[in-house]
Length: 268
Ligand SMILES: [Zn+2]
Image 1: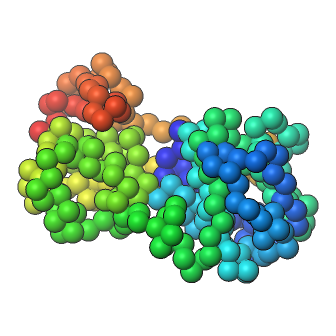
Image 2: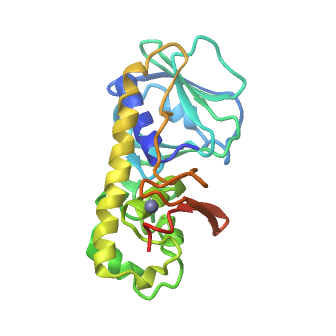
């Protein structure tokens, strides 16, 4: 499942082939993903020049010179394929640049989405409107204020997109481990010192994952190149029963229907 670093890597890969290019052709090969494709998507994008590529949370943003922004979400299984040699059944949306380079949005499970919004309204309308700050822009004082009085676990609260945009299960587990905070602790019971450790821990795990993905960007234009997926090494995530670096055994619990991995010795 693509998390924020994969989306960032995808956006940077798309930037190399789309920035400054005109979109020559748009082809919808089915009517919908999670939602119906926006009305007039092909018409509004065809002939438009791409002026910027950005990311907000787990959304990729493609700005055009017509004041429209295409907002994509990769859902559970989405990826962009660059210059595919052949098309697959799950290539649901095609963009072709004026130079004839083809991009295919492939999404077998179709939990992804594509929206078209006015660029000046990106931050105020769905789907990006209402998202909290980027996890790398969190501020300890304001996070501490937001957690005050909250009885939900810090693990659950950090997955709330209004608190941090795009922070997913993997990086919440990793950041809490790095900050030595027990994921079951109520958000409102975290000390100022804990929040002061948590904020840089979140920033570091995200930045390290983006850097790891960045090393695969060199391959972005290989035939059937798939943007954004890379293997990562985790300290606790998906490591139930294995050793933490302290020697204790990593545990898995379920919180809010999601697996949480943590070290009972390091995280208090
Ligand atoms: Zn440990």
